[in-house]
Length: 223
Image 1 (cartoon, rainbow, N blue to C red):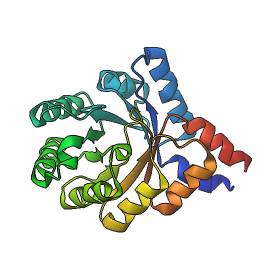
Image 2: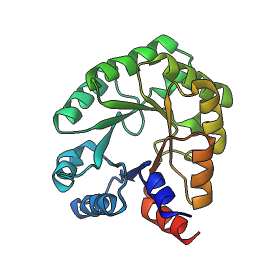
Image 3: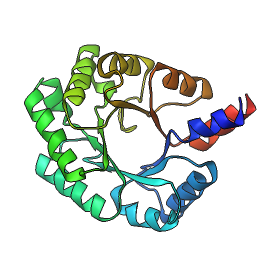
């Protein structure tokens, strides 16, 4: 694979470490890898936003964080507070977990209200909505995509990586069919091989969330 093409793919990566036991040194390594491979962002828990901003100072690598993570069962008010606090500390992008129960209950008004309140708190910052596809039927995935399409959010995102499984090809196909080019798509969780990565991109993923960014890029280099 050509070098320029690999560099373009690397710029799609949210290089991720959301582990419960991630240490300061782990986060430092994450940032160093993001700088070395020219990834789009690092994705970390809110506690590490400030550390990442320091590590990545004067670079183009952004800092992404998670809200209502990983269960999504927080109140709208608490998610809004988390978002405002994260942005105050320097977060460039916000990945929120939707209230999956309200989604499965088909409570469109609640889900839209939740997303739009958080987007209002984000202002011009990018908002991605994690819908946890492994807990959804195909019909529910379609509904999730329709809700995000109607909302003020920027992205629909497949997974937290903390539930039963991560992104599937079906997820991306369903999302792309509904949102088209009107919203962006982030595939996250369970992308283990370069082949899977390339197919996710071909199907319509605009961003890739993974903790395997380094190994995936190295595999592409060897192709």
